[in-house]
Image (cartoon, rainbow, N blue to C red; front, side, top):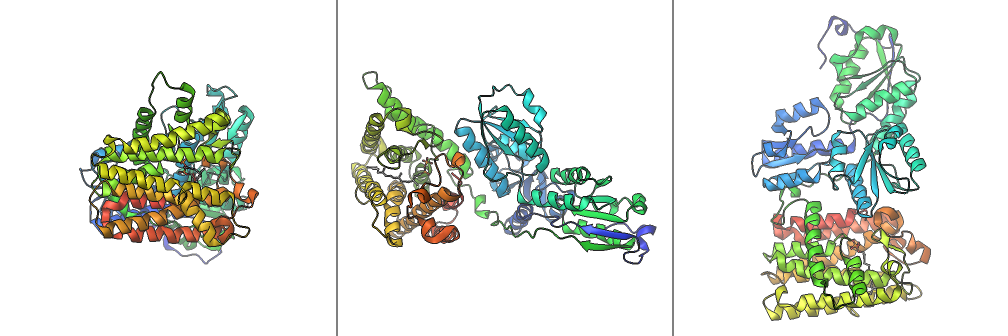
Length: 624
Ligand code: GRG
């Protein structure tokens, strides 16, 4: 609260000094509220202390309040005692930070704002599709540091203004993509994006702006009122990038005197005499108490408060999952596990395809093109996670994962052929028949399918021949008439008026079968009771449907660059899908119900099923 100075102690009549226009919206955004709540919840569940790497949000008052509740703020995770709870800030963290936390066996909660997470996913997808990424942001800002840390060094260049482009050593024919720090100034980002488009010939960018809704709304709100004001006060912390941007926006909009203040104690009393109209706003990380303090000081000086019209914000995020506290023996966040598994699967596939000199080199090259260094590896991770849950071997799970990836790749190659979906782009690259030719695509698919069965049948996959036979049998069923081939047939030749049940059957075979197989195969690697198996299969059934529904939704709402393949094809072909049957909102609601059913099926497994829960969450929210 502001100290009671002689000036503030006297209360002047309301409106005699002028008016205060309160910008709308102002103050906390949904991502900030969610991150602060994550610390409070972690303290509630685990007791003090919990450790927080860096300021959870850029506001000293928020940090000090959480410190009083028992949070300990550190600069790096190596300051956190082994095994303790470590919370990562809302600005997002580099992968190396999570690896370091994993190395210390910390229970990690990632309080990253979901909208920053979206930028991370985009940057990774662009990097994986071979583009150099230009990140429009402020060098050294934690969000920028975290985003850079999602991909190898050198894959992203940070630019903050058009002039920075000249310093980049990139020829104009470089394929680039841009991403933007979520709290960047809109006007500056627009200028830099225009300069990028003028400099490079092949430029990709996000479908919707990366600058978050809260930054956009607060900048627009202060811009709208700044012109009428003699003074604009932005309540926020000097650490806060979005707070500083609000001052700049007010100045650029024509207010001669715009200042950043931390709270009531900081109100510049000396300039109030010159200010009849004061604009008041607050950064997305500023607590309501600080704004209220300023209002108290100003009303005591005779100003009347007036709410300006503005956007009503209804954005709410799901709370940060406290499940993430249990890393499980597979270790790390979902992204970390995926990164590690991708490397291991790539190695396993490379070894399985082999480098024999007496074999056809073009065929082997096409098989590698279709399988190595691409794809999310969702199904392989699923096998590994289920194997881990039942105490099975990672090496065996890896071989089964590689076999599944061969079948999956085969189905994608054939699906993309002109006689089926006729696609030119897959996983952000030319489809196999475009890169090679149709005959090679058919034969590479055949050879990959054979390779899958070869891997499963080999001794190294499991010492027990009966288990190997079951693995082979279940795979044959997953790809045949009751699986991928049957599902694809229903997709290509649907009944004249397909019912919801027809669509369900088609998707359950085309997509669900391989996902069910991944779970079933993983469960074969360790002891599993009949009840546990039934629950895992129920989980798999729901997960397969969620995965396909999200696929249908991405066809409507996805960005081709991020998804890695053409979008809008279902509508173009008049194909019945979850989205056309239920509408976008209905499909999202259905996906959410199915995700809940996944979690319900896993409930008995406790923390050990965390990686599976992460996969269900990923399936519902994925953008690619
Ligand atoms: C396997 C014998 C046999 C025949 C195949 C062509 C065909 C018959 C089936 C088509 C199956 C198909 C393409 C289903 C769609 C499944 C789906 C949602 C694929 C996308 O999977 P992601 O998102 O892809 O996991 P990435 O690229 O990440 O691996």
